[in-house]
Amino acid sequence: MLRWPRAFLRWPYAFAFCLSVAVGATAIYFSHDLNVGLKDPEGFLGPAYIRLPLLGILLFLVGIVPQAIHRYGVKNTLSGVRTIVRNEWTLKRVAYAATGMVSFYVCYVSYRNLKSYLPELTNTIHDRALLQLDHVLFFGNNPAEVLHSVLGTTVAAQVLAVLYVLYLPVVPITVAAVLVLHRDVTVGAWYATAVSLNWVLGVVSYYSLPTLGPAFYEPQRFADLPENGATQLQMSLLRGAFGFKEDPQGDKIFGIAGFASLHVSVVFTLALFLHYAGIARAIRYTAWIYLGFTILATLYLGWHYIADDIGGLLIGWIAVAVGAWATGNTRWQKRRRLAAEEGTPEVEATPVS
Image (cartoon, rainbow, N blue to C red; front, side, top):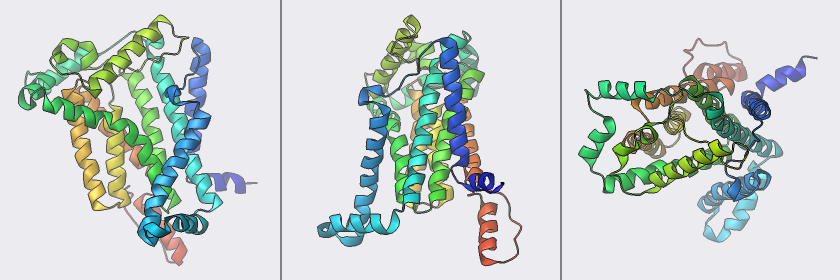
C-alpha cells in the first residue's frame, strides 16, 4: 500500500508536479472568483497544445544535432541522430523531459495570470518607499540618473536593452537545453523545478509588496533614453495594462510589477545552477557576466529598484536550494546515494546545495 507514495516521492519531478498543480489550481480559482478568464500569455504564437510540443521538438533537435555532428561528423549527421536517439533516449527519459517542460509551462502561465490579477486584488503600491531606499543606498542620488550620467544614453542604452530583452528566449531555451543535453534526468529536474519555483515565488513577492517600477512610476526620469527593445516592451506592457483595466474579460494581460525582479532571480538561478551542476567553465562564466549586465540593465532602464534586485537574488537562491533538495541533488543526498550504491557506511556531510 505504501509503495506508490514512496515511489512518487522518490520521483525527481514530484515537487515540480505538485507545485504546478497547486499554482495552476490557484490561478483557476482566482480566475473563477474574479470572473476573469485564464489567458495564454503567448497566444499570438498559436495554441499552447500546439506551440509547446513544437517548441520541445525544435529544441530537442537543436540539442541533438550538434551532438551527432560532434560524435559522427557532418556527413553522418542523420545516422548519428538516429543512433543517439536509439541508444540514449528511452521512453522514461522522454517522459521526464516532457514532464519538465509541462511543469515549467503550467507554472509560467499561472504566474502570468496571477500577476495580471494584481489590480483586481489590490490598489496599494509601495514605489515611494523603494525609491527613497534607492536614494539612501546611492548617497542621496537616483541610481538610474547616476548610471545615465556615467554610461551615457546612446550606445549603453541599446546594448543593455538587447541584453535585457534577450532574457525572453533565454529562459525556455535553457530549460529545454538542460532537459535535452544532460544525461542525468535528476539534474534536468533540478533546473526545471528551480525555474518553476521562480514563477511561484515571484507571484508571492508581487502581492507581498506591490510596486510598478521606476519607469512606470516616474517615466520622466527615462525620457532621454532612445527608443530600444526595452522601451518598446515597456510600452507594450503599458498598453496591456490599460487594456486590462478597461476590460478585464478581454484578451489583454496586466504585466507590470516591480518587486521582486524575476529577470534577476531567473538569471541568478541559471548561473547558480550551472555553478553547482559543474557545467563547462566558459558557460558558467558567461552566465555570471550576463547576470551582472542584467542587474545593471534593471536599474539603468528603469525596470526595477535596488530592493527588487536584492529580492530577485534571494528568490533565485531559494529556488536553486529547494530545487536541489526536491530532486536529490544536494551534496549530502548525493553522498548518501553513492554510499548506498557502494554498500559503504554513510559519511557525514554538510548539506550544501
